[in-house]
Structure formats: C-alpha cells, structure tokens
Image 1 (cartoon, rainbow, N blue to C red):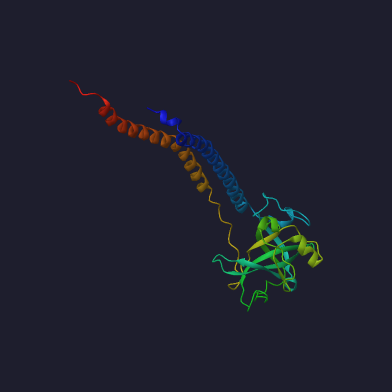
Image 2: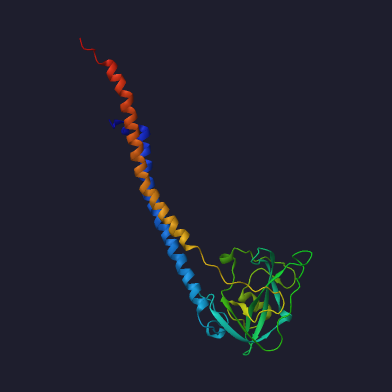
Length: 263
C-alpha cells in the first residue's frame, strides 16, 4: 500500500523533510540566542540609566575606550563650554527623522582636560548641508552638566564613512582621538550626550533616551520555528496517507472489473 514511498518523487520529498526539521530547530535556537543577547543589552541599558550619576572622571580618562558596561552611564561634569571650537556632526536625524546636525561642543573641565559634549540636534536650515547651521550658544561661565556617557563613534561600529574634505567646522563622527588632534588638548575618551541643563529655547533638541530592542519578537520567532519543525513531519504523514487513500480508491474499481463474475 505504501510502496509509492520508494518512488523518486517521494524519496526527494522525504529527504527534504528530514533536512527541514533540524534546520528549523537550529533556527529556533538561534532566535533564542538573539533573544538572550537583546534581553541582556536591554538590562545593561536599563541598569546604566537607573544608576546614580557619578563624576565623569571616575569612568573615563584621556585615551580611555568606553566599555559596553560604561555605555549610557549617567555622569556629571563641572567646567565651561568652549563654543569657539564647537563643530557640528553631519547627517544626523531627530525623533521625527528630520535630517540635520548634532552639536558637538568641547567642555573644559576644572582640571583643564576636555570632555566632548553632544548638546543635541539642530535642523539643517541653510541652503545646503555645506552651510553651518544656526546653533544657540551654550551657557556661559561655570556649568554643572549631566549626561549619558557614550563610546567613540567609528566607521566599523556605525557604518558612517569618515569623509574627508568637509566644510569648515563639520565632522562625520564623534571621535575623541580625532578631536584631541584637532583641539590639541587632552580629551577624555568617548563623549557625553547632554541631558541637563536643558536649553532655554527649542534648540538644540536634546537627544532622547535609547529605545529598547524588541527581544520578545525573537522569542516569538523561536517558537514559530519550532512549531514549523513539529508541523513538517505531520504534514509529510498527512500527504502520505492521502496519497495511499487515493491510490487505494483508484485500484479498487480496477480489481472489481478484473474479478470474474460468479456463475
């Protein structure tokens, strides 16, 4: 009754079925691995944002590479803004996906070292992106600011090409090593996204908190792959039984016609 399973068509179908099952199971485990990674990152970000602010010098120094655990940590700093050596970072978007600039201002600490501060987003209000935008001046005099510590931006991590020959006072990446050369100063590793004090006007527009990665989506995908893996052999069995019934139904009339009539 099931000799048709030895046909070429069914042998190929069976082999494909046997290949799909472990593949789908592995894809499910890969999605669970992604779920664990994303959940861990979300927890790291949450812990960093909830931690008590500490002086920035406790977490970074000149030449320091900000670690994953230090990223998004809230820090404080005392000093003054050096608006004369301020630059803008090209091709950055705000919460509404409008293209503009981030304002990067050197912040001279009380010990003379320099901290790079991303003061927020401003629109590209000039005739082209080559024009320097209108940037409100930072607070004057001695300031105490609060912000989130971030690692240096690199092309490898961000995918942003560090273009050369840019207009004056414009950069592509926020990189402390690069800025240390430009400023000829001791610049702390990484940079700070300012959260306080808030600007008096509408700009620069402060950068919002980092969003959470959608870890539950990977969990759902894992369950989906495992359900598929369970469904494949069931589907194969249903097809095989249907084929057997159809073959039996086709063979029954033929057998009746070939049977001699009783005298």
